[in-house]
Length: 313
Image (cartoon, rainbow, N blue to C red):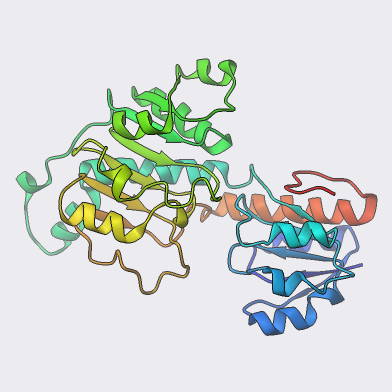
């Protein structure tokens, strides 16, 4: 058995594979053509978000048995093609939970209190205290779109702050909601009522561009959007127009429709805080997801043990 590691990961992944006596190669930064040429030489592949396992790359795979995603989102994997070829796809939903939740809340604090702007100004030797009058989080309505593991952790933190929390989740149980006194509402009502909208949902046909010109127009003029989930949830041009025209108060974005976002339509937009996909970028998260994905893929190949699969056949 042999595994390909095609994205940069913590060295913990190698420690796990060595302990389980599974051979591996590390080949990062390959072009799609290069990856297509070698992928079926392996029984498994470990990826993060940089590797794109398209239908074309997976179409001719006959030996590849499992794809391990070190992280939550698998929109960089063609699940239909993987399933058709009987390739199991696994993710690691808990490894970066804390890191992503903490970043989401950190961005809320920064955008609401103008921390990022005040930092730049002060470094320039200015003393513009009146310019950075902020808004407190306590008492504000937080709309959590998607109430999975990360959404629930955000709710836990923000309930302690004293925020009122609503979610559009159809699957959240009454027990999950009652823990932090969360109210279930429609997506439309959430967008209208929330002072802060924090996105924690999957990207699919239903959620693609769910934040757009029309939905933004129903938001409060004082409202803020936080996105540490997936870039395609937001129409970036529509968000830029809304912020520049002061239709809403601000936004903090960590994910982009096309990454790496070295050139993006949102650059230079007013009241917009941008970070380079830092959701899982903590020392702890990097270690956690590496250990989790290596163990899951290795155990599947050795024992046919299935954990955190996102497809089945």
